Amino acid sequence: MGEPVLFVATAEAGDEEMRQRIEQHKRARSAAWSTLEVATGVGSQILEKIGDAQVVIVDCITLLVNNIFSQYSDQSGERIDAPLIEKGVMAEVGELIECIDQLDASFIIVSNEVGLGLVPANRVGRLYRDLLAKANRMLAQAADEVYLMVAGLPQPIKPAPSNKISRA
Image 1 (tube, one colour):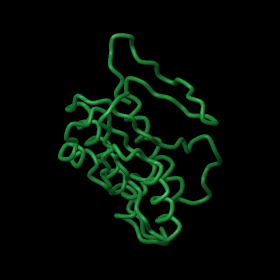
Image 2: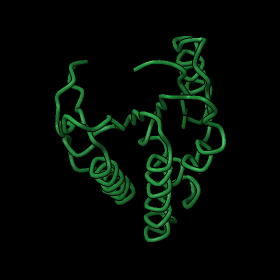
Image 3: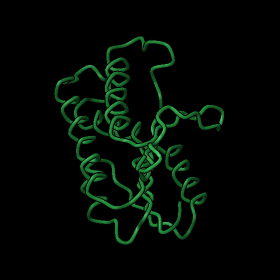
Image 4: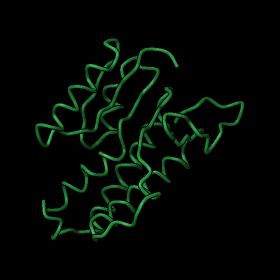
């Protein structure tokens, strides 16, 4: 899609294994890309840091939703304010969509599809799955193109009209 690229990383190193994964991801990225590491407030941070980037890769919505969960619940998941978390997730995704609409850049948004597996056995897992599904749906509705990656092969879900530039 071209250069320059702004890579937006939403992962946080909560433990040593995750720190190693983040380092591995950093080594695998092109040195020419700019990187923005941000746990929340993604849309506003992109607006501030986009510079001359023509392509923005947000990796990933799955961890972004997790970051919002972490802000509003304890580690055990016993004390959880579902309406507050939902409000936070919807605001975060809405802000990201507004950012996309304001910029003349191509966006690639990475997320996981968690609705194809088993229903989580606990309340927190089900809430997470449901809110990630809402976030994915909001982003898919705003996107020109949507792909489901299966075994590394892109499966088109929402093709772009032939006269539009891809934003997703």
